[in-house]
Length: 543
Image 1 (cartoon, helix red, strand yellow):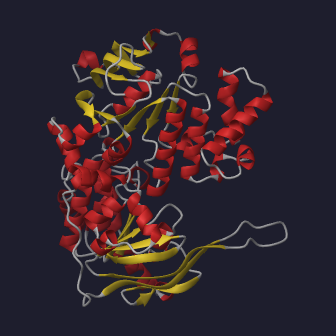
Image 2 (cartoon, rainbow, N blue to C red):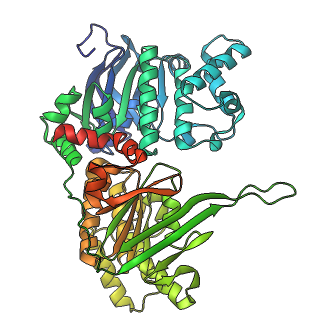
């Protein structure tokens, strides 16, 4: 139901949120005169880039604003009751019981020191008058509904024993056990692979529908908006830019900001160009097998678990090859082995014709300069105590160049990635997209032969993704390095790679040129990945 109701379930009316002291300084508010309604049972998306205020709006509903941030105007109503006027004890009765929230990273929001059973029981003990036996029955029934294998064992297990997708299912179970009227999902699948993402979101839709709950989905991913929501609200820098039905927002956006967001779905980058077979092979992988050691017993060594099985792969100079697959497929493990960060149990990996395991110390030193890695989360991989200029220069510390040439090369590469004036900043003073540009600059400053990019844009907004991908392609064309692009997002593969390798369960199930694999996938697993990629579906809608 999209039509306005006399009493909506949730109503924002002129909400204004500011950081402490900003009003006196004349700075813009964090959330400025925001007004919208959510009807009972409705699935609404709040869309925007990082810094748009969408998460702040969600947290303000539960009065969970960060320190130093306060609401200075407006009302937030639940079924006509103004939540902003409630006392602390009254608000605690609302949280969980009437409004539930699923956070972005379940490993952070689940208590690592408590069993799943205790965490599921916590809300029921606080808000429901149930016996211990009734709490256990309700918990087991909900774990079955979220399709957890062996719910009885799950109750006594800890969060670290589950994958990201399973942890998010457990979070969903904990929230929906209390049957809230409103479910707030704050980027609930950003950290998940495509298949897990689809499973969690479809489960959320199913359970919310069964319980009659409305859902407020906070996201920057228009693919998810297109697939799952009825209506969308678009925010930029704390202001409402546009609202309407999902189809109208995607097919006929009125606001220039919304138009830019929708344009990012189409992708401004064409598929990579296949390199001729005459180009030299930079990386050659043959029958690679990789194992993780098993857990040792009291009297015996642990049985190793093989995670990559007999993989063959060639990457030529100037080529971008994408490796795709769900979490646990072995793609990141293979990438680390190619960088000699993970030993092989069997098989061989050659770099420029030299086997990694047989390199001399001099050859290995040269290899370390010639093969670079771009990590998924630049904030974790950049030294917070170093300035940007020193972070980029660190890669050149063993290069045979003097200090003046080193400084000139650092300045040149910072200019190439659009950060010419950022050399004296620290990582925390930059946005996520800017930090990823620093990570790319650090990788290319030493003129590598190979760059392994491990999920380099998965944590970024869609428009920032496009900018970083365009920069990456531009630098790859300029320097001609070979690239292994590791991702779970097939929409990104379509935009950047010439060839794609699909992995499942540690083996290569399909590979070939991107157009042929996308248009005529031969393996069932590839078809499942394509079907689970909402950005492809949304791109088709807006094209």
